[in-house]
Length: 249
Image (cartoon, rainbow, N blue to C red; front, side):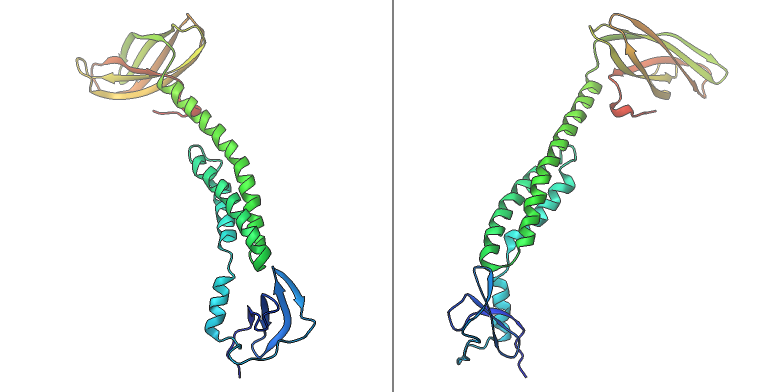
């Protein structure tokens, strides 16, 4: 009983690139440049030393693998998965370009080996779509950077506390903020209730003051429960609008 694994092996007759061995004997199924045929002369005649051994099957499989096609498919999938993400879009873009490059190489290899054509085509398609998805990732990156910049660099302003009252355990801070810029502005104001004469905050929070017209002053008020007999109210800082409507307390 033969221990040869059925598969494609170098044609012992030399007339074609590969010939199929069914595990028992050579067949008339042959292949050249990835195209399969039926040998018009029939089965290759047995020759001494031409029957493949199991080890030669492993070697043939390795030689006929199409690694660029597999790499193209994997890289294309990565490009689709991360290309839309802000900042990580760089990884997606690189993966998409590599998917296209490996896909072209893999497709050429498949024309001669007959292996990996579907993987190569998948890599080409996902790589192309991945590049398109990266456009979304770039746009989202710009949006995020703009939001962070607006938060960290608020429009010109002035802010002050106009009153600080304590009624039982309820502290009330009243303040005002003026927009000194030439355009409408949104602000995020961090306030704190502290022990008199210190900056030891009993409670701090943020309040958003939006759509302040240029040159206008807007009043804001904050109430908080505190465990103090006396308090001071302070403004710790003024930033731009919180990114994407986030609320920080």
